[in-house]
Length: 222
Image 1 (cartoon, rainbow, N blue to C red):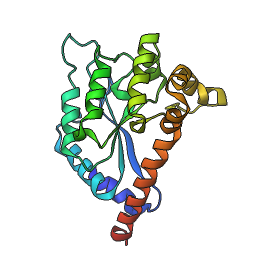
Image 2: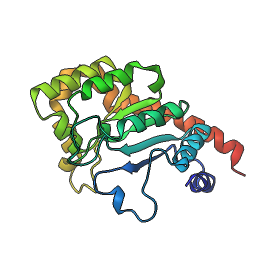
Image 3: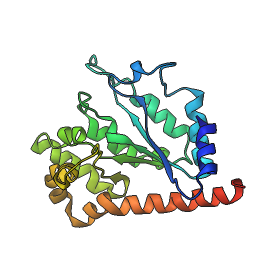
Image 4: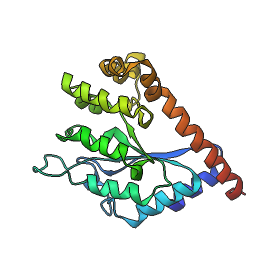
């Protein structure tokens, strides 16, 4: 996989600034992929992360916090994901959908989990993605959920990014749908934080990545 990413950069210089969204643990999908089942401890994943640190590529990774219909207890995939982030402090990583999915709902202390990670310098390279209507479904599910989400984002507005994750929308209304679901959140966090989450953080991260990748290409593309 790392060889392929390098080959794409060398074949199409000036085009790419990041990789993803790619999947490690995803509801009922991961087990259906042919070949080895993806794992957070696979050395191939570490090699990808190392190359992205070298080249400056951003990484957008889908990793659910837990299995579908989990048993009570600590989510299965949080610790492994945290260890991955710590192993690669020089790789900028975006956690797609906050680890949530269609039936992967927030754990009871989700806000505390994120606050702990956001406050911990070991995760300074980790950013959180709000895209997908399934993510919005959970975060906007109640006044309590909206309030807690707004509390976390307001405290760390530089660490969150909005996205639609719409698939081939054929109308403007569909393209705006996810943004409009979050209307209560935008009102709760205010104009300045909304700008950062919806545009400013994206511009900052991708401008930085673009400059790093173009510098890598100057040295490595013949």
